Image (cartoon, one colour):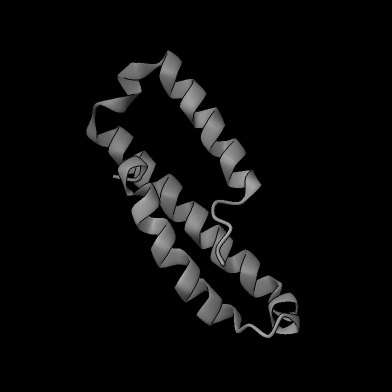
Length: 85
């Protein structure tokens, strides 16, 4: 049911992957972990807020937006935990 991550987040992830491949020194300290967690949190918050702005769309599909997000986010978190720690 979940189409995670949306294409915008894929493009952001591709950009950060390219930057980190050419600047590996940014990967191995506490700042890198903090930025990674911030980035992942901002992606999830953006998805949640965007979905709630489009509640009429989800309702037209017979879905409750909040219930959809509760089902969509937990499966996405473990899949990206390795990049978000």
